[in-house]
Length: 384
Image (cartoon, rainbow, N blue to C red):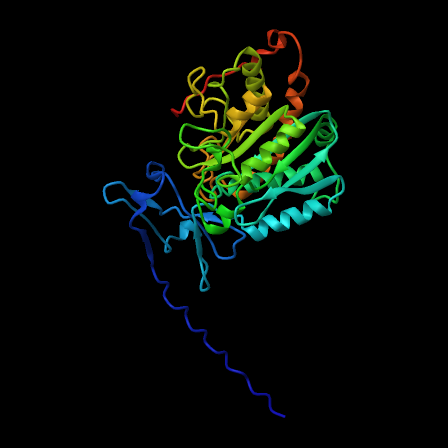
């Protein structure tokens, strides 16, 4: 038989890549339009890997936010298929339920519902540890701040050894001996499902529902059952340390906001706050101390916010932790920016400062007089 040589078929060149410019024409009407400068949107082709689109620009005169898909340096699209864009990568309700399921299956954890949201979704709380001190960590009061639930995932993964067959490190072991943790991964599931940035199903901003104001009574089952159920359980368990985890649109850093405006703020709470933030910065250099919200004036704190209400109600260390939507200027990474992975790592690192401050949380006497200078309270500023 004669062998016939097969002629190699010439491959057709790929079609020329189309340049598409995306324009959000009413970006100026967003809740925090002042935060657009310096923002880079995220892009993904698989909902797993998200990269920053470096061509993102905001024109303050026109109010347009624009980006393109044709810049190779952006590394934001592959040939063919679909591309998804996001302000920050989503943590979907399915992701939330998967996290709850993993925690339920882990040894040493107890998952329970504290109550239901307005749309009938459960407000799950994961309890782990057996220490005398009680620590509460809540996440995503503002549902659009999805980095907060990535933070929760990192914290719970370390506490329960979710990625290591239940194996935990020495610091985690100490934390579980020192504390009983009550962790709420998602305070506002309705808002997330509905696509809200800051509110629940009826339009309430949960971080203004922790006490009544001159305009409304709070929390109530009618307008803020999420806060109502969590605060009721806090009253039952007590609180020795509290962290409310958020994302901030404007400041390009991770930071801690304290309870300086509370009536009970004094040398004790100031010392605990200083030691906590200093220890956190040493444990993870994505945290820093000098930039934060401007502290509220003495005795003028908003008592309907979570950290202020908890600090005053339980006379304890209570902080608000904020992560950036933008890149983190203390450790810049233009390609990925502040990301889900870094949010998880910052969540895992929360255990280190909690272990560090544990001996002084309820200590009698002027313990702050013998604390090292590296733990001194630094009054922060919003200027950077």
